[in-house]
Length: 87
Image (cartoon, rainbow, N blue to C red; front, top):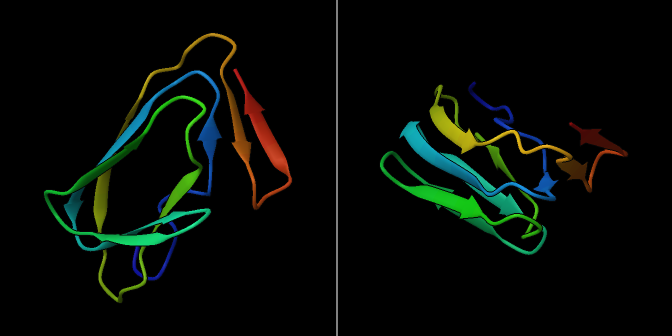
C-alpha cells in the first residue's frame, strides 16, 4: 500500500517473526531505529525481542511476506497503540 503501514509496531511473547520484502521499499521501524528494506531483504525478531513495524513511505505499492506461527497462549503487545492480542 503506497504511503501506508504494512504492520503496527508489535512485539510477540512466544513466537518468532520473520518478514521478507517481495516488492517496493519497506522501512523497518523499531523503538530505537529505522532501516530501509528493499526486495530480497528480510528482517526478524525473536519471541520477546524488539517491537517492530513496517511502513511504506513511497508513492508505489509494495508487498511483503510475513512468517510466524500461532503459538498457544501467544500475546502480542502494541507499544504505540493501547492494545494487545491474546490467542
